[in-house]
Image 1 (tube, rainbow, N blue to C red):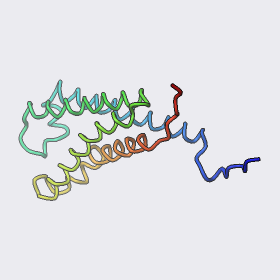
Image 2: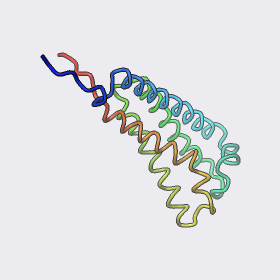
Image 3: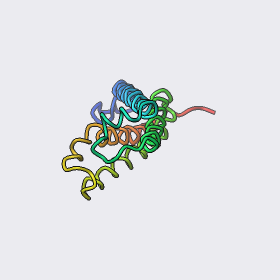
Length: 151
């Protein structure tokens, strides 16, 4: 007779499934938001800049579109990560690389005075928090137990 497992020692299947579903939903929502932001930057760069980034310096349409392409790519990767659990860690990780580097650039520029005083806190909800969330979701996916498949 085998001893019964202590239910507190390991997460239940339903809690693992719930966590995976919540992670997929978060990735999908973030992906759609990033796709929308990227599309806005690509299609109406001047209006995007005036509403979002005018305190960062002079407007450069080409640069805004380049960053918009990166946001669209990150958004597409996150949508795919939400829909493809087997590739979730890699896809979210790739998006997290861009978002993380972008957030670090904002921190460095805020610390050096290249961005206006208070920019670090102003940027937190739209730059730093999403990067942290995506990186956490990528790590969660990478560490999640996998179902073994028979060959």
